[in-house]
Image 1 (cartoon, rainbow, N blue to C red):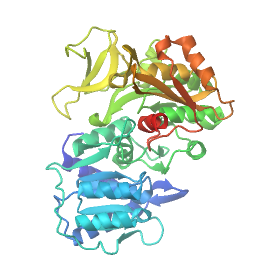
Image 2: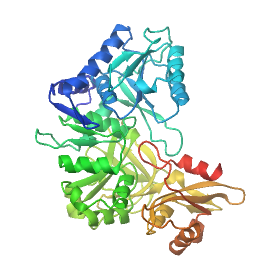
Image 3: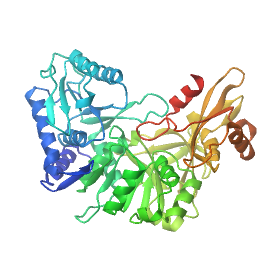
Image 4: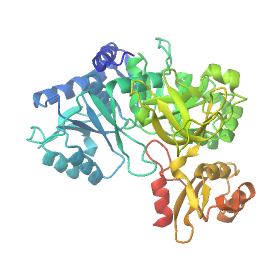
Length: 495
């Protein structure tokens, strides 16, 4: 990784075309070759060029985890062309609002996402519209959007970049601009530094492409010369079948996937090919990790990163796990090579002593020379292992008593009938704010009552941690990246 956007794009372009007629991706039970993928790439690029779209104009893509979308994204990166993600997991009116806000010269979307609202929004900004599909004509101009309008169009940044979306757990997703060298760091991080060989099993890809995890995982496939099994959305059956069929040895997951596999009681022999599971995107409580490892005999190597850093900051490696796995159960591992971390006092900004809590800061030279402060509370022990203690900005001030939602969540997850839980604060006229909880029960368990859950928390935590209300729901509301939507849960109680 040399940090030069042009070199990165050229390398990706050469490696993508290097597949030729060989298999590149399986989607919905069918294998597609490298030529199939570059066919999409070439047709999209030809339409953009024929329309006279300048290199400096912005491009928007309404993204889905489908093969044509994977091809479009890879093509834009390989062409060193800037583009912005638009989530498809929203209403046509919201997609249209995004198009108008971004003012792109080109909008690429699945044929089914070209609703009247999106067509009209693209027409108002003067964009050409490109429809992509798996069946029928794969790449076509949208009727009425076949000529470039007058704009004005939003200008791409001086250095080619990708606008990725945050997961939207605390509110509407935000866009964060990542320069191509930073995306390259994300791809290298997603590949975990492993070189590919022709005998390697394919990678299992299911993280949403709109976010940093999904686009990094996608770009890592051709960048490392691998093949992939692409799932449009995660479900236990397809995920497990792919692991069994292709004898996959390693796979990255979110905490929700770990809980769903345990809840589904997937037989250990179905995951026998796996050597370890790695994951991130949110904390995984030690009890769930230990239960999974005991059930399947697999090391769970957890990591921590953020969209702003375009990849992993902290991680467990197999070597670290073998040496310290038992002694450092609650840790999120050590900093990745080329990454510096520290913990500082929230008020003074001074670095705290080993073992003390404060805000986690990180410095990644590729991104910039400055320390970047996160909103995560952390501590670093004398051996350099980092432990996360929750989000500092998520603390609930209940009449002067601080409640960390993660503390209550971890307690609720210890209840034998609970699969997942979330705790948020809502306004209270007397105390300022109070905690409330939503709980998703295990599939085959008798759903616990509100009183049982509040009593369970009271048994394990001080009284001010006990939620004033608990709702047991069949499914917690989730973002496309399988995180629980805190905003939706808050609305559940306040609406």
